[in-house]
Image (cartoon, rainbow, N blue to C red):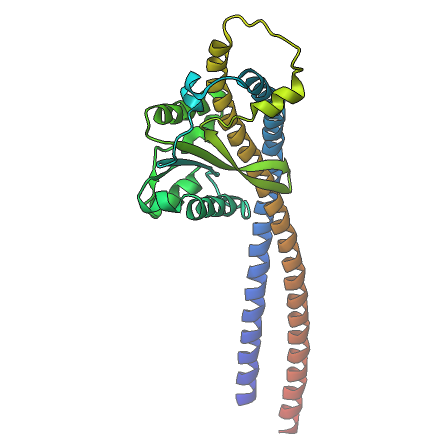
Length: 310
């Protein structure tokens, strides 16, 4: 009877182990279906986001070129956005996403922002003169938990990502620069290259960086004389705010496309990893099941032989 009890216990443990592996197979299979669906959703969203940034880039680059040509000979006093000041008060615009599951997308932009603060603006940070404008819930939560001076909440922007909605953020930033709340504004974001590659960029938003002299020499011959109506100063004063708003809008669109590219890549890798894990689990399950059957047969034969001898 003791031999039969041992056999029953062994069979129960074996079946429990097989059930555990079977449950893991079901769980991993469900996870794989989710990651596959998320990949397809991100691929569809990536197409729209890519179209938006690809259409905006030529316009933004041309606007920057025109502004450079026109403002080449302007003094800083002609526009408040051209005034270079000692960067005692710094504002950093950090653009991330509202959701995770996108690989190192959010972590990379936060890391770049932290590096910028610690290396370039360490003195301002020690005096409490570094502020953050967060675009995206992930970076908002990160800096709020660490007691940074986070200005506003812009997490709803991705729900209606338009030039008008982004301009509201830019208007507040420009107003703060003009009234002296900030002496320098920098923006950090993921620049979209392709679905598998994003590059972290840091750009100075305010004051406007004047690289116009090189552009003018290259693009406009010195013999060409333009007649402008209205005056050159008035045109530039209208173009500068437009260019600043476009620059930030382009950064947000770049980041938005990069987010979907990073998530699509991450979910693709997760789906492949789940497939490999499933194959491994199924192989282990079949091996354990075959071993259990062989052991059970051996134990039954041995038990029958022991009873017949007894």
